[in-house]
Image 1 (cartoon, rainbow, N blue to C red):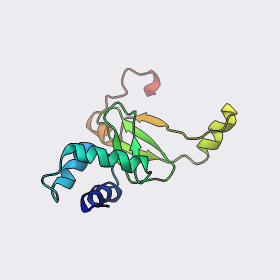
Image 2: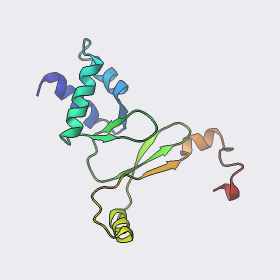
Image 3: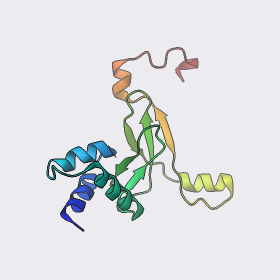
Image 4: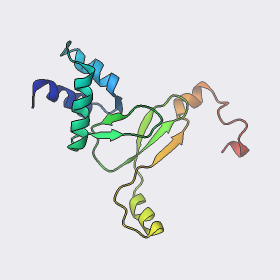
Length: 132
């Protein structure tokens, strides 16, 4: 593995956030100013394929990458887009019991309004039945 590849991998694994390619590019570029965006994309795709990092897709935006390989799901704020990890014990088993087929993987996305956005604008839930 090259120094550049190690740097890209370390940026993702070191972060507790779900990073976009642009964010990873900016962080890696500080040590490798001539790195191309395509190089970042290629390496992230390869690392995700090799299961060294996790690609988080389908959030209505570009793919995000994270170093947390433990089984978990995600929530995303409908206002600011912030993505956080969600751990629900027994969820895979519950889904498998309900469906009856072997559950290979599970990608649950919970749509939320995060507490920061709620503090900024308490009117988010107005107009919804019983505030739900």
